[in-house]
Image (cartoon, rainbow, N blue to C red; front, side):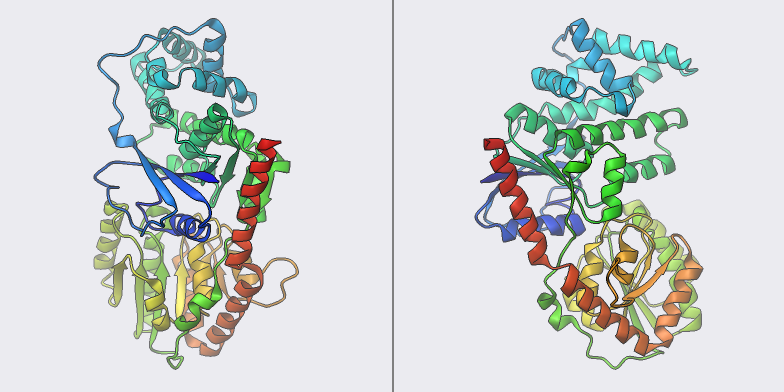
Length: 474
């Protein structure tokens, strides 16, 4: 079997939870040939692999959005009235009125000229109609080019040559999901969609907070990403999520419930046997760790503010932040500036490291994210018997406190999002009670053993691969 893995902004260039999961999948399925179809930003930012690529990954094909540009000359595209109606449906209709089959047929027919459609008379007329319907006060040319700016990356990536595969597996919705949908439709092959976080919700949060999208266009951008998810959910043969709440959100956003399955992340606890701390638990000298990408969604600033409060109560505390600092350089600089302003000592940004080498020195782990799925880093820390203080996002509460039927107890403390005082209080409580830390560490290890094994996760995905292949043949 040959599987095309489609990923946006992650593997093999950017380390992180999703990338690590892809590496695990490829390494485990040695009898499967993989081709990676990666969507990246620019050649400057994403030029070097962050992973040792397994031998069964036969090809890595990268589409760089930074290469996109309207050509000075273009192919003149004349759409029929029926085709224009399909394009209008994609551009201006609400998510629940999308004729996704017709859209995929249009994409399949004009795949080599998709960028030219945006410069066509039909697209101009559709935008003019929408401009008048909205009664927009913007200059029409500005309105038109905003719409072209929204749809051009989509048309650009869909004009790329499709890798040959027996099954297409996208690891998010968004652009990766629509690439998989198009490839599946054009090549008549099965499509599997996996979400680690709910892409649409994450983009909505980004857009609402952004300065690069003008107020009038925020809703249009949000609806655009909802449409991409809707198409992917409908085209996929199966849609996986990491936990129940995430599955419910997928269904709410248009995924047919019968397609939606939950497959939790998993780790092999034996790989973390050597990571257990052998140091004597102290209530004065503690090392706190965090495994994360230094990006806004991880809310490192709240973590730094919380640690500043911890230092005032426990002068012997230290903080090690492990993870990529180069993904968002401006945010990393803002974090450094905040540290300097606070004057907090004993904080170290270690960059990308092998966390297993550092876990034996860590007494407590922190997660301060404002959005998560089911963080693999948390499962790894729990496997190493390290307790957590984490924000109440994604499945963090379920990981630390257990789901229905799990009576093991708490493996950490859950705190509100963006609340440095609550996080600091929880950290200080853990520091002052070494016995509590040890008990929560043991519970975390046991929970991973019972409910989040890597072997179960891999077995579930292997079965999906086989089932989808057999369904297509039938």
